Amino acid sequence: MSTTTIDRRRILAAAVTMPFVGRFAFAREAVAPGNRFVFILLRGALDGLAAVPPWGDPAYAGLRRDLALAPPGAPGGALRLDATFALHPGCTFLHASWQARELVVAHAVATPYRERSHFDGQDVLESGGVRPHALATGWLNRALAALPGTETAGNGAVHREAGIALGQNLPLAMRGPAPVASWSPSRLPALDEDTLARITDLYARDPVLSRRLADALAADEVAGDVPITKASRGPGARHLETLRAAGAFLAREDGPRVAMLDTTGWDTHANEGGAQGQLATRLAALDAGLRELKAALGKVWPQTVILLATEFGRTAAVNGTRGTDHGTGTVAFVLGGAVRGGRMLADWPGLSPQALYQQRDLAPTLDLRALLKGVLHDHLGVPSAALDTGVFPDSAAVRPVADLVRS
Image (cartoon, rainbow, N blue to C red; front, side):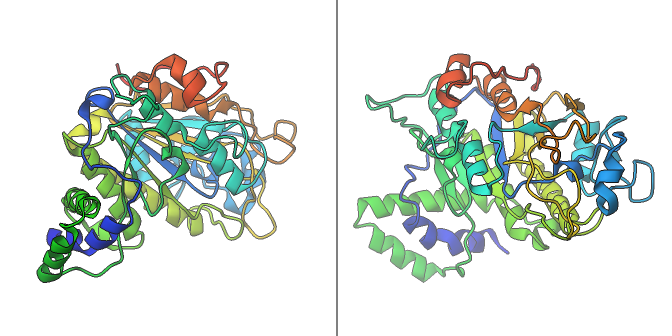
């Protein structure tokens, strides 16, 4: 597929479905110079005990039964991190990143939310609050607004776009006073030269539509500028395309410095599988996508931090349909060339019956906001006072995790 085809198939949809997007002109000075941040939300509650199995915990195999992964070193076994933890065998890029000291794995992580509704859990995660539906804006947008050097009008609105959301809808985490750009792949067929010329002439008479068309053309020129690889043509190609586009936007000198995207399908109530199966396929696709993202980021990889999180975990024990139900504690990943990695962050509570939360879930011992605060402060330069009050309201007691990024 040529770059021209990739560009044109999205132009019409992008121009008319981006009412919340301002000029596609990014500000270099709106974030810490040179640093990039990507937030990936894994919607559906990732099974942290499958993605990062605590193979050294004596209760692990008994709880997981058929879903328990073979230990590191065994055929098809998990990929060793340390004497307690490993990675799912489908996560080969993440394991290579661990070995390169570019990955921090945080276990027994949770937001302040303690119920088990996807809708409410995602709202708390994205809003940065402590209760569902208490905030109408998101923590990532408020962090952009709090960055040193951003300009605001008298009403508090920020006039520079330092962030981009990639997907069909603007996620809650990116809604708020800071304007952000948006991009999503389209299923529309390619437009020929004549049709595109006619649309351009038609929109030229309307300053708003002509501006949006110009923005869409600029966005798709960037997104379509990454070479198509073999991995981009298989299952999950649309997800890979989005990750590649994120890397292309952030790799530009005049591009955004912060991006957000999400993935779905992590709700594994039945037939979850172990080393093979439903979850293994999704983990392998995510892992391949992260490899593509690194390649697309290119020379800015050493200045990049990627944080992956999910709304809550899953039950410690397997249910009657060989899956796992909604739980509490789970994992988060901090990845990138700017990460001081090769480390586990885990105040591990254990999986014994008395250690489980409500006798069923991995007990959370690390607040996800502590990870987010550490990255936002040390990597992007968001002031501590803003993190404690505006970005994550009433969170002064949640201290940021230090030393996540290289100095």
